[in-house]
Length: 60
Ligand SMILES: [Zn+2]
Image (cartoon, rainbow, N blue to C red; front, side, top):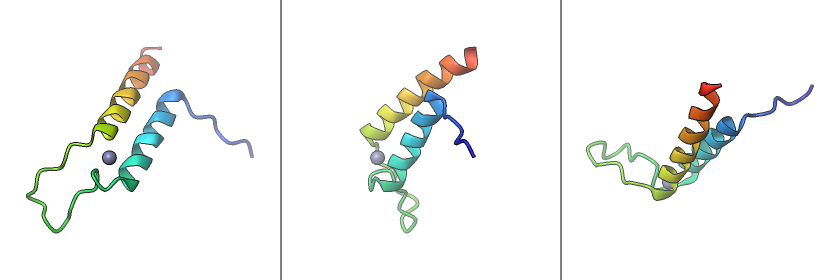
């Protein structure tokens, strides 16, 4: 089977998801759901990178 090639936007999305799984700053604390979710600059940068690529792909 040939592995499906990810588009740049899909790769960026996977990178964002992988980061959020591993990053303690991105995990929501289920014991304290009323707490504000802390801002994670890395996640924000990954999200912006994904959004820019995604916008380019949907415009095609
Ligand atoms: Zn994070």
